[in-house]
Image (cartoon, rainbow, N blue to C red; front, side, top):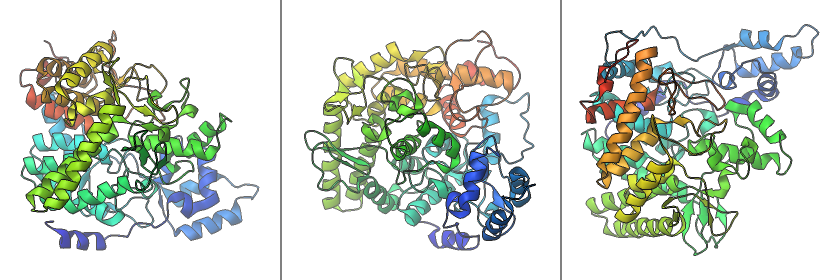
Length: 534
């Protein structure tokens, strides 16, 4: 890969990654800070920078913590520096159209390797990278693909190339792409979209896809580790053996303890129920974070409570559609590189996965794709969600099933402001009434792949209207949006573990690409703080 020696030098010049996560590094001090709610947002402490050697801080804490006048919050303030959100003096120009606003935000959202500090939870990367924004000051795996769509349309091939190097570097270093470049994210990945990124790199002339083939194969090995020897009904790590012996995948996290970035929240969730061991609850919460859908009724066992999350028991349609795309691309690139044996092998794998998806995740009565419930043998989930569009997005579906899926999504999930997430209105952010940019893009692109242009255009128009309306009123783009009509126009979404975040990487990316595809859409006329007409 181009620049690899330079990349190695770049990383060698900065402080190395801390081999310990914050929980491992600070022990009982970590627990005290998180359970004592020193910070309103649990992510703040795990992203803090120590101003002294961590061992010295921990030793001083142990000496002083039982003192009569000890104040934990004051101790933390004296020994740690908070890092997010980073200061920014960016102010949107009131005469700036939406596309220009997005173009100008890329530099605001870009972080540089030299910003790495000793004992940070941040994993150093060789090249600059774009973060989502707000509390999310690190690179996120699946977010980045949708961000890249916009970078390409903004002509920021410099950042595309840098991101390509960074993801290759992560796979080289860790054997997979972590959820994000933080030490506390290393135990899990996210939806495997590196194959989609590689395709984007080649389309825009950033680099040839074939040079990433070793990384694609290594990522595939990560997801398939443990698949050998599975019997029907068994599951191991990311793999699950279906009743007919075919192997599909699930989300998984290597650890069964509270997430460090949401420590108290997970402890509280596990304590709210007694039906399962706390370790099982922690594992399923972590697996849901790996899915990117954190959190959603999609993963619930019964009722609409977060404590009912059991992600590891679900075979998700979107994960398996992404892995189909990965296997298909490995086969194609192996063929182009002259390795016919590997091409044939991965060709068989992707065909077998497509057949298993069609057999086990298609619901003919409902006319759509659904997740599969491993705990209820032979039963698909009854919960429709926008992930049903991913077999269209990656080209698995037959035309007949694509038409039926699109019709079901239109009838049951299409909302005033775009494609809905689920049919359940819960307190979780990956449920109604919220809409998310990646789901809009995958549904639009999936419909377009099968010639369903009218529905694709309708979803795009509704989403651009939502984003443009909020931009015109509040001069910003946000992480998620309420899709139901409101008297005050578009509003940002709610629910979940943290407040609505501004920025926002994947909203910017998808919106920028959609604006290119719809030059006559009224959203082009939106100006910051100024409502558009039409």
